[in-house]
Image (cartoon, rainbow, N blue to C red; front, side, top):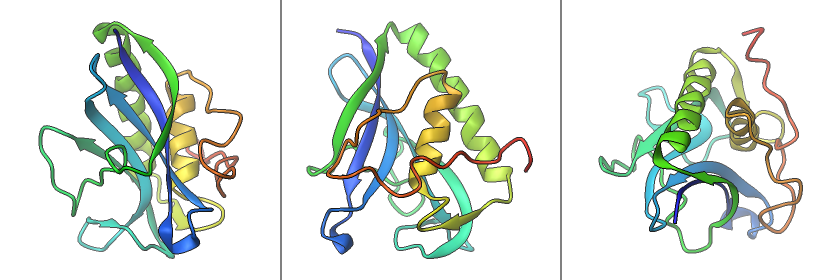
Length: 159
């Protein structure tokens, strides 16, 4: 089995599981997560804001070998998360795509863009990360409905 990049969706309990938080994950040949990228808002101290309404838009890279839930969220391992395969391949081919994803995440962090629950959020970050790897986000919802912000293209070139 190959390494793979997955597009994930976590149904948010606060919204009865209808709205979702989208993310992107790199899993090894056994399905074990190696890295995950989550978009959202950052708190003033740089920690991930799990209950954001507003704030600076960020993209956080979680290294599953160095776990710290305050600064590096993990949604792939939550039992209610769903995923769709974006691509599978050799370690080298997936690593090359992931480097592109990390570059997009850095652009997002430095962009000065603001988080907005309905417009510019984790879902637009997951879309930007996916497209930055030269991949296409799932055309149908991974969760119950297509999440707000998932159609939004971030203005990274203008930031």
